[in-house]
Amino acid sequence: MRILETENYEEMSVLAARIIGAQVLLKPDCILGLATGSSPIGAYQELVRNYQKGLLDFSGVRTVNLDEYCGLAPENPNSYRHFMDENLFDKINIKKVNTFLPDGMAQNPEQESARYEALVTSLGGADLQLLGIGRNGHIGFNEPCDHFPKDTHPVALTQSTIEANSRLFERKEDVPSKAITMGVGTIMKADKILLIAGKEKKEIIEEALFGKVTPQVPASVLQLHKDVTVIICKS
Ligand code: F6R
Image (tube, rainbow, N blue to C red; front, side, top):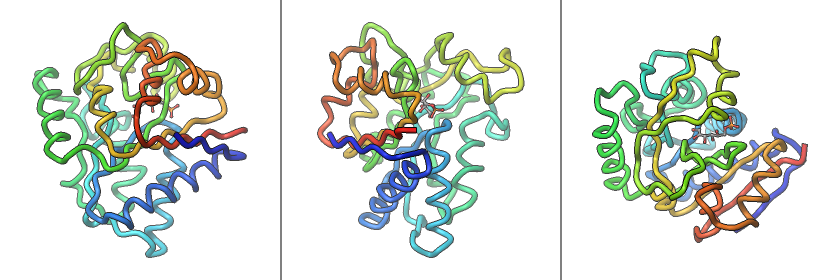
């Protein structure tokens, strides 16, 4: 595991974008595993800048996102599909048909989870999976529990995650209570993992990377992965 510390969010974003960009340069038809949330926004902006400078070509890249809320249509500004389109996909030359997220509007979330898991498997898993981390140690929407969920599955979000995510919604009542997320096993299938975390995640990062491997801290499973890079910012 490599742990890199940067002075601030901007440096973290530039470094993360360099690592993702390097993956695209090395393997132009790579599978990128992507995340939403506050942590990756700066990295996506930097990837867009590098694309605009002609340094990166996304035309052969396919992407799989970690998760999606249940009940939010792609047009809903709070859906993760909308987030990805707005922050990245609409600003680079990726083919939209090559960008995948679970379908939050699926009638049957169990079936949709199985379909998404099969899709990720058929792509051979991500070459590089980008992750953020929740204050409770969640990765994707794998919340603390008594086992590591293996495959993509529907989840009930914990109160702490609903609270944390409500900052992006007009009203707390609008935060969906369910989501579909890649399982811990799906995430661990990635060849390489890049975890980025702001300074407010320092404590949970320490617990996850240096504490006991336990499903009570889902990110602790990353200690068992062969190729993890963590970027934390100091301020
Ligand atoms: C996002 C995701 C979540 C976030 C985590 C951190 O797709 O799966 O696990 O990465 O909640 O969110 P931020 O970056 O907003 O602190």
